[in-house]
Image (tube, rainbow, N blue to C red; front, side, top):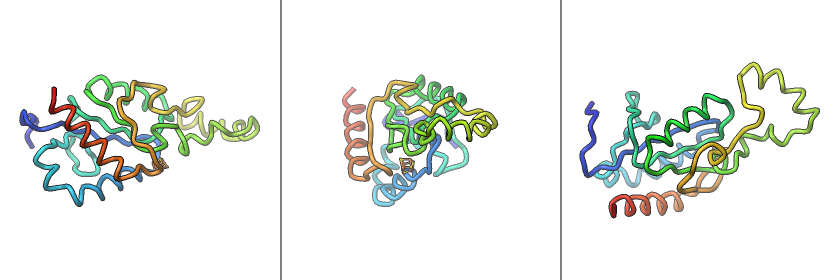
Length: 164
Ligand code: SF4
């Protein structure tokens, strides 16, 4: 597999954190209709749902779904931010932290009853949305994301990156 990207291709990363990964399903459904066009313009550099050998070097657009529930996720998204021109938060979990972070809204009694689990799995004291950790350039809301808005935002980013 080549590790270099043709100059005319836009490098894509797609990453899933704490969530149900429904945005990934939506993305692959949209891809069914746009594969011929996308394979001409995108280098799917790190998209685990599409391939097993992924490259983590730099991205033109990095899509992030899911909330940040543990410190290793904070580290990972910070690393991704550092190697990406544009970072896109996809879906409610990434943008608001919910519903994945519903433990944030538990009563004190409920929180006390799950403390041992948070500790056992090395969780953060509270679950964070992506923008709590890194700068987000574009948001695609919904639970899961709206396919039409996804396409609009993708096309807008492609036009923006091509204009540079
Ligand atoms: S926003 Fe909704 S659909 Fe998307 S990952 Fe979270 S729970 Fe799943």
